[in-house]
Length: 167
Image (tube, rainbow, N blue to C red):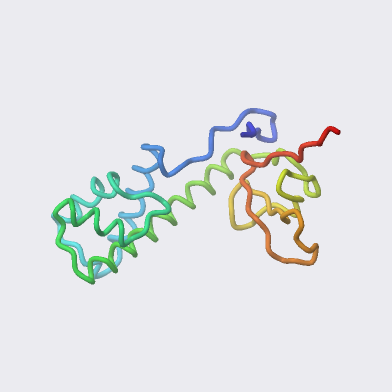
């Protein structure tokens, strides 16, 4: 893993991850605050009080909402089709909140890419900096046609330089 630095040459904090307890608390709180501003959000006051703890226990960025619904059911929640829809919506809010937190981290830390556009990584060539993913490269995978528009997104800290093969 690459250590990331800012423009002043100082090490930056690690990228927020959804498994970090403080990050998870923050993004769930922010997401629920936004979600509950929506009219007719469908949760009663008792459920609103229980949601943060249940989400802290079971939510993850890549979790399938139907699996998450099963977790809620095991914890004694009344589940119906409307609940599944509301939970899907909440997960979108939480995922967006996490993405916003990562963008804030990248902006606040003014991170310098550890490699340059055109450099070769172990998986391909860096063709740009992602506009959609904070502190990440767009990489043309080795063996792909140079005219191909598909790119793999690689986080700055996960980018590995091409190894030279000794013969």
